[in-house]
Length: 118
Image 1 (spheres, helix red, strand yellow):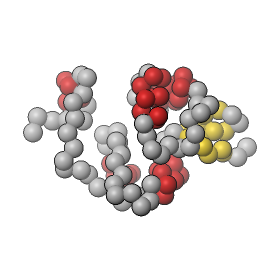
Image 2 (tube, helix red, strand yellow):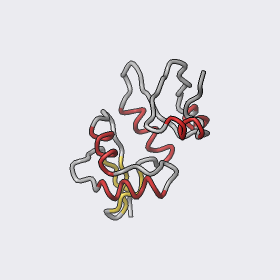
Image 3 (cartoon, rainbow, N blue to C red):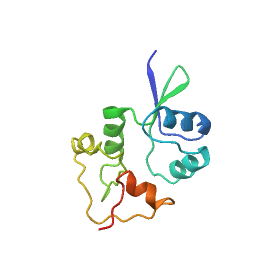
């Protein structure tokens, strides 16, 4: 069965998306938080197989598709799981030196290596 690619959130099952996030190393994100994030994202990419959501981070194909869709924009900002930066470098992404963040749980963010004191 072929993969079906979509950029629409019109019929997206947010509970299914949250389950997919939990099943992958993307983390435990509540459906409402995902709805907010994806509703506010200019470009989205979802992959279905036999009506089931199978990818929102399906490796090279999705990233390549998103980079292509956003071609011509002044900047593309991507959040990555710590340690996955080499994967994104293959697409031309560079580490930002000006990003700052405030996390709900700053201690946990520091433990995971997302932020540091400097």
